[in-house]
Length: 193
Image 1 (spheres, one colour):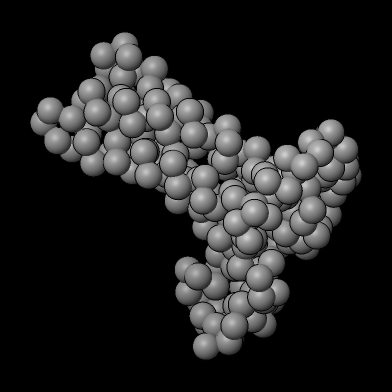
Image 2 (cartoon, helix red, strand yellow):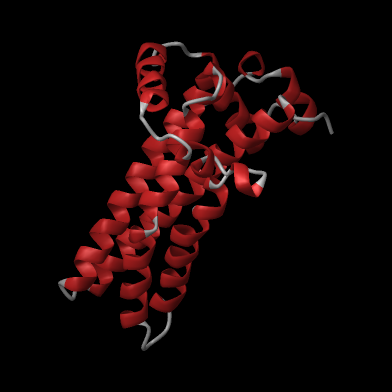
C-alpha cells in the first residue's frame, strides 16, 4: 500500500513525516477510522453487547475497581505466554514448556476478549472501526496459535514453530491496533514532534 501525502493526516505528517513507515501506518489507520462501511454491523454489535444482562459485572469487566480498563491487564497472559513459548522453541529441551505456554496463552484469550468487547461496545465510531480490525486480527492470531498447539500435540515441531511465529506477527499487529485505539481515546490525536 502506497500512501501519498493526501492520505496522511496532518497529525501523522507533523509527527513522523509523510514518507516514513509510521506515517504510512497512521495513514492506513486514518482511512479505517473514516470508513463507514462496517458502521451498521458495528452499531448492531455494540447495542447487542450493551444489552447483555451483566449487572454489576459490567463495571468489573470494564476495570472500574482498578481505576482503568481491565483488558490491557488481561492481554498480558496470552502475549506473555506466546512470547515465552517462542523463546522455549529456541531452546533444545523447550518443547514441553512451549506446548504448555501455548495452551495457557490460548486459555487466557477468553477473559481478555470478554473485557475487550465490553470496552469496545462504548467506543465512538472512529475507534470502534479500528477496534473491529483489532478484533479480527486477534482472531487470526488465536487461530494460528491453535494451529501451533495442534501441531505440537501431533509432534510436528517445525509446523508448530511456524504457526507460532505467524501468530506472534499477528499479535504484534493487533497490539499496535489496540494501542492506537487506547492512545486515540486518551489524547484524541497524535502529538506533533
